[in-house]
Image 1 (cartoon, each protein chain N blue to C red):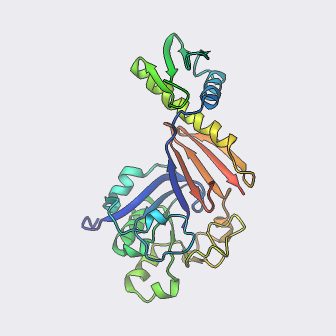
Image 2: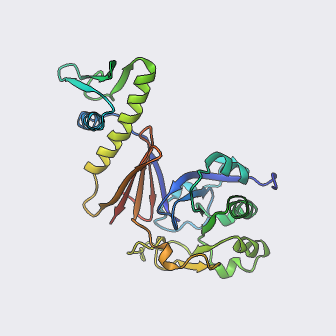
Image 3: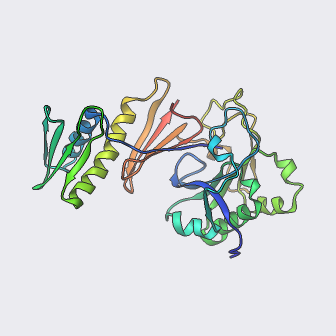
Length: 113
Length: 187
């Protein structure tokens, strides 16, 4: 039998949130983002649609606010890229990425170990 | 289609690239009494209702065009033999899919049963035997431990087709959900 498990992504670490936003900007999926370090708040601009990524304190998860459609779309994509960045950053030493692809809305990572 | 057959399913991966040749839908059956030490999926052992589907419904709900085959894992699918047969028959006859089945039972024992022999007639590859954590498969062959045997029940595949492109597959869905599958696991 092969292994199976599912992990739901929570936006808990600021560095991966910012890494995800940076990747979205690099791919042209958002226009820009501005980090307010004091307020644990990030303002994201997608072609004039503004959403905010914020959390109450350092121990809580980030949440996305704003107009529902862009907020949901940006939130979903940000969670996906957050997961991707988190996986890459936390791979055990005995595993390495053999291949990674993006197709049909999914990011697929093959590991050799 | 025989609609009185229901399969208790633990989970389904619509497209996996590491559970047999090519892209495959993977259906994990719920329920197993083998209790292999170090089993990858202990949560699939209890015989409790998780998600019950008619075999045909599994395809209407999860099938994605372009896949090469169906892989059945678990749990152990041979605790739900009528459902397994219907699922494999539908995979082959209705969708033209190849079929790979994992079981902790041994082929010879199963082959004594008429329904299992019928199941084998709809199975391209059967991987049998209990998982043995002292014999972990070191290569990319699609099995957990080296004692497990690959039975090629049709001429569709050979052993090289069961050499996977990785040991673990991580599928990050559009909402950030990470599905992890394969023959090892990331802690």
